[in-house]
Each structure stands twice: as C-alpha cells, then as structure tokens.
Amino acid sequence: MKRVVSGVLVLACLGVGQFALADGAAETKYRKSVMKSIGGHMSSMGTILKNQIHMDDLVIHARGLAGLADIAPEVFPEGSNTKKSKALPAVWENPEEFSQAMDRFIDAAEGMASAAGTEDMSEIGPAIQALGGSCKGCHDDFKAE
Ligand code: HEC
Image (cartoon, rainbow, N blue to C red; front, side, top):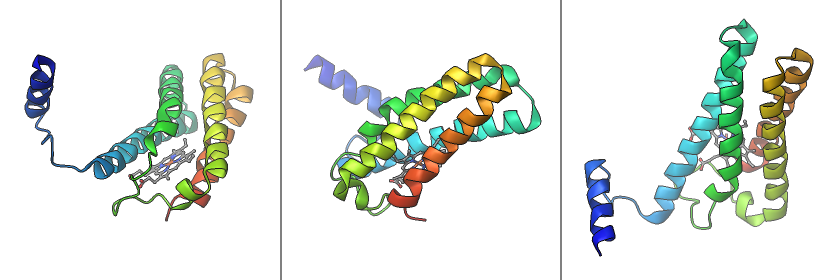
C-alpha cells in the first residue's frame, strides 16, 4: 500500500495525471516518444558524419540508438493502435513480417554501435547506410505517411 501511495505521489509531482490517458493512448504516446528519440540519435549521427564535427560523440548516439532498438519490440502492444498513431494495422496483422523488419533494425543498430567505435569510415559508412535502410524498410510497410 505504501508503495502504491508513493507511486501516485511521484506521478503527481511529475505533473502526470495518473488517469489522464487510457492505456492504449499512453502506449501510443510512449511509442512515438521512443521513435522520436531514435530519430534524434539518427539525425545527430547524420550531422556529425556530414560535417565531421563532434566525431567523439558518434559512439554515444550509436549506443543510445542500439539501446532503444532493444526495447522497440515492446512498444507495439495490442490495443495501442489509437487515433493518434501512424502505425498501420499491418503491424498487428502481419506479425511475422513486422518482426523481421524489427530484427533487421536491431542487427543494424548493433552493427552501427560497433562500427562507431572503430573511427574507420569504411566501417561506419556502410553501417549507417544499413541502419537507415532498416528504418525505411519498416516505415514503408508499417507506418502511414
Ligand atoms: C520495425 C518497424 C520500425 C523501425 C525499424 C523503425 N521505425 Fe520509426 N516508426 C515505426 C512506426 C510504426 C511508427 C509510427 C508510430 C506511431 O505513430 O504510433 C514510427 C514512427 C517514427 C517517427 C515519428 C515519431 C513521431 O510521432 O513524431 C520517427 C521520427 C521514426 N519513426 C524514426 C525512426 C528511425 C530514425 C528509425 C531507424 C533508425 C526507425 N524509426 C525505425 C516503425 C519503425
């Protein structure tokens, strides 16, 4: 009981209305936030490589993205295809294809995390291309424009 009460207090302190979002809507919101974070790391890496600035940070973004890739399969629960979601029904209707796209992404994210540490463009270039291809591969089939 004490834990429940303190949990509610923590949420209140964060300004999160505990019952403001139905579960599905909360899941959609969380998924979109995770994808935005993935997008943030991707765009940081693109900017680093294009302009050759902050090269030392590349590995931080690559590892951050790989960590998010690991949790990505969990952010598509049943019932989270709400009005605000751009996920296509295919995510839940073609689970095998979706999971293949997801695996390809996780592998590519891990590949980029190892390549980033090498500081060798002949490794980094193909790795980031494969990673970008894995985003597109999933978005083309599973995300509305
Ligand atoms: C296995 C499928 C899959 C992969 C791989 C994937 N995405 Fe997504 N992404 C989605 C889906 C589905 C949505 C729509 C989510 C929603 O609206 O509920 C999305 C949404 C997004 C959004 C929009 C978030 C928002 O609402 O503002 C961004 C940005 C994004 N993805 C970036 C990326 C990047 C960058 C990669 C690769 C590094 C990537 N995604 C890989 C499926 C994927």
